[in-house]
Length: 344
Image 1 (cartoon, rainbow, N blue to C red):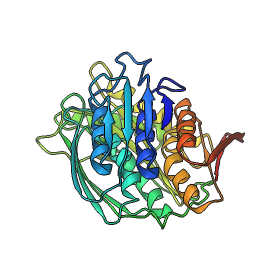
Image 2 (cartoon, rainbow, N blue to C red):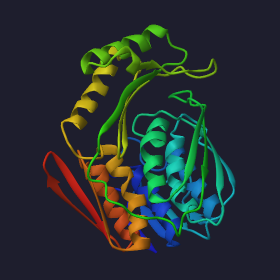
Image 3 (tube, helix red, strand yellow):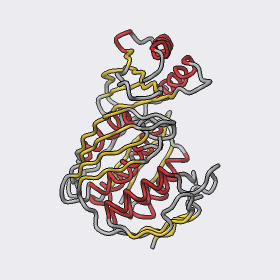
């Protein structure tokens, strides 16, 4: 059984989710202690527990410590099973993190799987749906892992109530690692504001401020559609599409934060990325590590990518991946960013 210190490195929920995903992929059991020990509310919160229970359902795992606020979890996976699954966080906790937990394992199944996930679709500290749809899923498809994502309903804190549908096709024998060192030619740049149940002036002010700062035209500034039963909530989403990848940057509105401040936050993210010539932004550099390592593990050899920033979150993720897979991550400064390699 692999033993993991949940307080090591960045010390957050990513340690749990990566451990669950790779335990299912490799069949190796693990014991995770000191779960989120340094957080204001340590242990398993509801969204983390949903990830654990989803992983157990997909793999028929045996569990110990799977309860709210637990700082100890033992997870013994069985065989991954394709199927139709419904996972609901039950709060505004991120359902995209639940999806990312079971996604790699379902690639190992023998048939397609269909998932319906409920909870928050656009949360701070979690990949928003549009990041998964535009940044993560296209790279997964290039890796050989076909998936389709649909946003049925937006979900924001504190109400939640969002809904995502996903179809994941098996790809265990088809994963092909590749290098991602350059963005390629810029194809498109645009921003959308999702602000259901809020005055339309909020979206207009955020988009106007972003457009002025970035020099974007009215055609690049869009108000996202919403339904009457969504929200209240506010997410300003900017997308930069290149030949080799797309990057998505998001800022969230909340009480006491002006529309201008929301726009300023997205502009800062965009400019930081544009100052570098590296391919991946800081969040994608973290999220991409696990599926790329799986492909390298299966195929052998080495794959590389460049990124504008290498966060403590990413470095911790590398360390957890190395506990489950016979691969090695190496990173070095390169120009205005970083270069990461993963080698079998």
